[in-house]
Image (cartoon, rainbow over all chains, first blue to last red; front, side):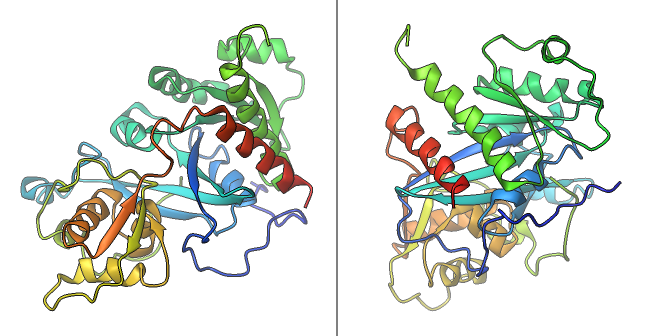
Length: 209
Length: 120
């Protein structure tokens, strides 16, 4: 499928692969980029991250806060999943981390650990297979994370859906932001993140504002 | 999220902590910041702890960045970092001040920062 990550002119420069925190880093916040496999989570993170996206290998067969005990070590079927993340240093000492988060129920313990302290979630949806995102939306809602939905604009995505149809198909509340983005384009990815952050601000605004 | 990339790490996760399963500190978050204290490492420090200490030589790292760098699960780095903190070789701080997550000013700074990103 011709949908590889592309270098866009607006992609931030990554002159160095030193991943140590800038001295200006003060407030570190995170947003989950959630969605099913192949929906473009890593592509979106890569398009805006100042470091090449990193990943950690996380064991799936145990509670997330613990390392296997010796009994677990002998279990050769222990599987790991790679969790990608990227980082954006913003003016004002804020460093925004984006965590690509798988949405299946079997990743629940890992999900809870990654979601701890997150500002919110950007749920990436492929409009060609909307039902693949149901699990993710369920997890986000169970966790109580505020979220926005971004349709990743795959070139062959159907264009005949109206916003109302998509909103109904995903069973979204009227106040949940829904945007379309091209995860390969930095500006487009930033717009999707902004839709989420604006939603977070609105939620905390006093009534009637 | 994608499949496994690269080869196996030199030290398997379950050996890196010397078999210790739970960190001695109750909560190091993924984004907790780890900083070396510039105290000389004592002789006989376990290799995995030494590797983490070395990684902090050139600057601060979050727990998750240290895990990616050392190719260890976050859970293992939590154990290693907690031991180094107990030895006063490493200091940590939370990602944001307590109760700061829903600070409207913080959210506004994130939004402003993202907007500024678009215009550069």
